[in-house]
Length: 344
Image (cartoon, rainbow, N blue to C red):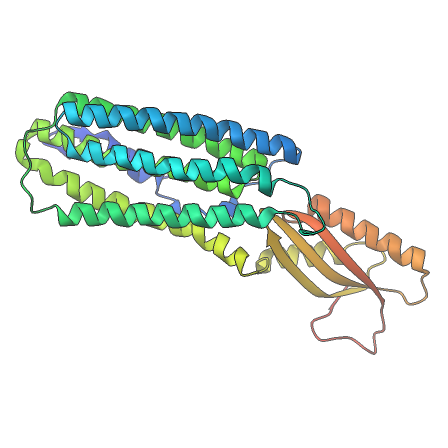
């Protein structure tokens, strides 16, 4: 991550702005599906418990921060901090969504949901992304619409302390939630982690405005400028969260790189002479794969089945996020090759 120089006001370094830009310097690569896989995946039950545990703590922290920022915003004469308290309250909605949804999306497949319940996680991820985008838009609108208004008394140091405490607490909560989300391979929890970071970022303009006005009371406009910058970055992060989830909901398959990886693994398996009809779809964070494997026509049914079993096991162990594989075995005839067939 690149280094960014400090932004100074009257010779005083405004550290939160530097941290803000560093945090989101790579937000364009946020896609929750690009989070690296862990080598050990916990059971579905353990995953749900981990997700619920970290989310409960996030909910409690949000409640505490909302109360602290509201009280100190009133005492410290900071309208921005009071508005930030409202933002913290809005985070409770996504916390409840994850808490309620985790037991459902981690439930095993059943007769009514033969592919599992992973789409519930995808739906919640998209909702979190959309809500995050709306928060960013609301922050920008408020900053622009109130630019012409005269401010009352200069905010006190208590408002700065509350804003800094919020930044530290929510940034720590972001890293913890993100770590658990990666371990549980939960796109919804990773998205909620970024919602925590958005709350931390929304406190940055508050800290900047308070510190700036303490240096020079006429610099109250810093609050509005910093808020708009943060809002733009939050909307960008929201897009990177919601876009992949919405693509999954309309059954967009794996990307070209993942498809090539799957074909390479299949064609490298002994006994496979060709492959075609590859279809993929995401269900939650896992990839379901359907394909036709072509083998020598003189093999027995048992031999063909054994080859398919090896292909399936290989895809589950080495494939890109593959959690289920359905293979149809066909005899290979070089004189009759369908369009799109890949030959070993």
